[in-house]
Image 1: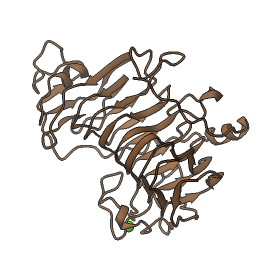
Image 2 (image 1 turned 90 degrees about the vertical axis):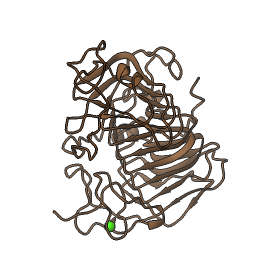
Image 3 (image 1 turned 120 degrees about the horizontal axis):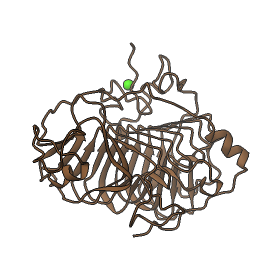
Image 4 (image 1 turned 180 degrees about the vertical axis):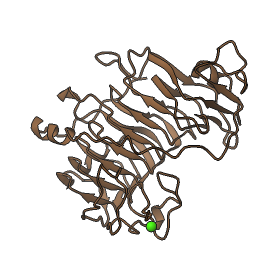
Length: 371
Ligand SMILES: [Ca+2]
């Protein structure tokens, strides 16, 4: 399988790219809420485990691969804090769950999120991945999406239907995408922190490395925090359909927050908070029908709406400062114009932190709550 030709987009003076990409943002203080309502662990992996063990909770396995290989539909594998995988390694989920009995892989309840090095693939249906950190670069990957200069590859590769990636961190990828979605229907990517993915020192790649590269399939991208990925936070290309990109906060991208290109069709971009990117929204040679962008807040992008938005139905979008900052982890302050400005039709019931949204939904990933 090869990654298809990418849209080349427009040339840009290097100094402008550097100025935007150079905004280094650190949100380490922004921890996902610890713990999990469900403490069910059918199998466990631990740095102190052994791959000759059964994997039952008192006999954990060592490797993430061993853990996922032992899961059956309806079972949950819990991963204790620590490091898994390694540079150049691939961990792959290959056994499918069922729609009502997914295979679940998650960070152990109450532990810090485990850190997975190398590439993580979900090549199966009905798999849910939660509370994990995927840390790039991948290292040299055998049989990856395509050969790059150093055989680096995408960090998390989703190739299956009904796959969920939630409450995780995807960072520091060295080639093309933090998350790559290929021919996958009903994918749900929610409440993740997706940041610093891409090759920052290669001008030739300034247009090509993204937070999420949604190539094909359908689903939901909601309540994610995207910060400082090289090119776009989300690229909808070559032919994704019926993807709802809603309630995300997207900051500091060298190209745009969202690009809709090629045969992408019926995708909706709404209720997002989009600041400090080169461009807020753009299209590129868009021929697919029915794409729309409405009710987003755009602020302090060099171009809030790019010159090329042909093929995209633009509804009303808000051009006002949301008054968010890196220092406060992009939470909304009292009086922000993003509060209660979401269209309920595109709303989601909870926010990035899992808090119930109140009143009309607030724009972006965070629902305002006075502390
Ligand atoms: Ca609200």
